[in-house]
Image 1 (cartoon, one colour):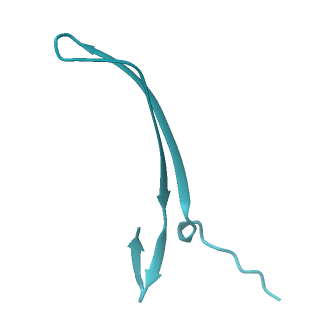
Image 2 (image 1 turned 90 degrees about the horizontal axis):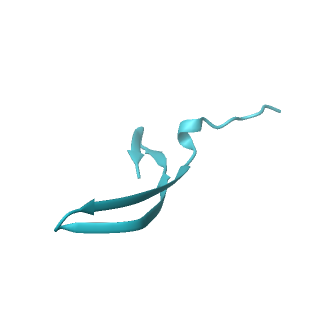
Length: 54
């Protein structure tokens, strides 16, 4: 029996991002304690020999 291993490029990846911002632009914009978060998902699959990025 042989062991098969998957290539890392064929596995999906997930990324978590986050940030914090405070801005004060006189007479235009004031932002206090703004927080942003995000999740990204990346996967590829091969169809007829071509790699497709989703």
